[in-house]
Image (cartoon, rainbow, N blue to C red; front, side, top):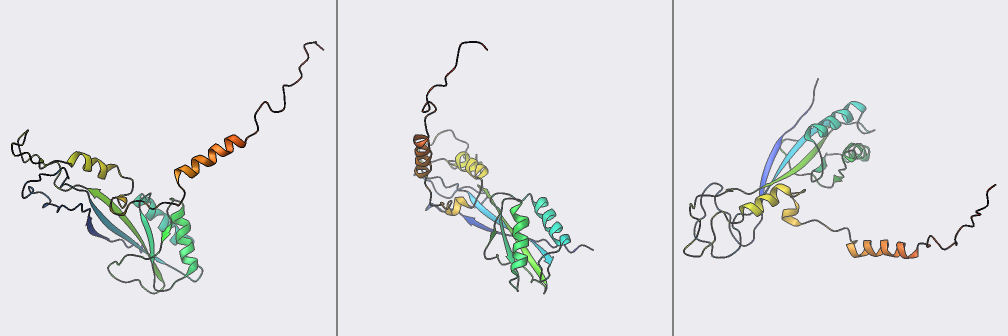
Length: 216
């Protein structure tokens, strides 16, 4: 009997640079006389959930296998967020889920997003949050002109750059909040390498080996 449970829920967040987004397929109202692009990336979040049976000892081998297969089906990877939703905080369950997620290079995050339904007693809900980025309304060729007599920016201005940015960014969440630093700068890393190179003993410090030209 299969107990797999999956549901997707989406929420849309937009990047704002002081310009409102136009309707997703329509033309932009008014003329843009600045060099700021009205066409900005939009980040969409989708939540996928799976309910697993638990015990005081954590997840059994069958449930761990189901979780691993589910992660593999979702092609879990960089940029995805894994969280646990449960009424009872069981460290053994958290450890088992974290161990499976760790095979994909993902750490379990604190705090799960709100999903539909509820978690049955004795179960745990694993939530995978995935973000995607796109630029609605691009490309926009509605104008039909190659120049602007009134010297305003074309309706499709920014589609190429922002469309490529949305397609190429490894983690779309960075379009909203940016990446958090580790506290170690590039300068610190480079200085450590330079210091190691300088402190290394030269290869000729021990002198040249004594080699005899006389045969044995």
